[in-house]
Amino acid sequence: MEITEVRVFPKEGQDKKLKAYVTVTFDNVFVVWNIKIIEGKDHVFIAMPSRKLRFPCPQCSFKNEVESRFCNKCGMSLPLVKEEDLQETMDAKLNHRDMAHPITKEFRERLQAKVLEAYERFLASGDRPLAHEGYRV
Image 1 (cartoon, helix red, strand yellow):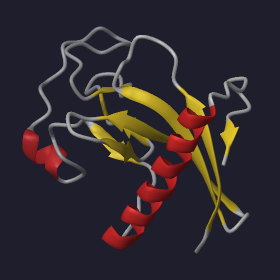
Image 2: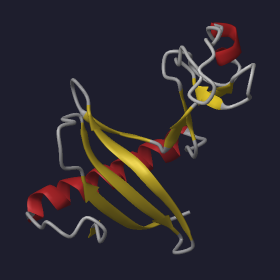
Image 3: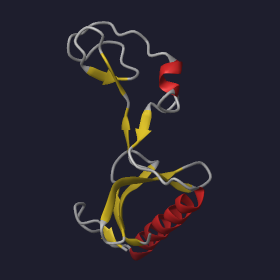
Image 4: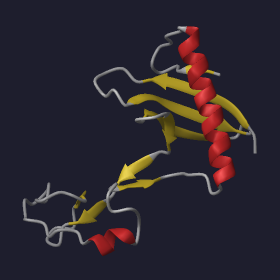
């Protein structure tokens, strides 16, 4: 599987750790949107697209975010989600689930290298494309 296109969408605003969103095309036929480029303490890394986990309200079944104390629909006080319930689906500390992710360490390293290479070229170029166009590499 070849990475045939990487598009960098720089992040403007107050979040200093989130540097950009990236769209990666594989073999000119499959696209993954919303890969994040994040600045950590020691290095820049990628985070795969994810969504917040939600659990249903026992009264009205509305799906609320994991750490919600009250239902956003009916206002009922929500029970705390037990850590063992979260462990079945993901790391309890994150409250997010990846929507797509590399299966092997080798492919993750290859994907991260290609994405960060594109991001470095974007920074070096000084180009500032329109937000919806991104920067193609």
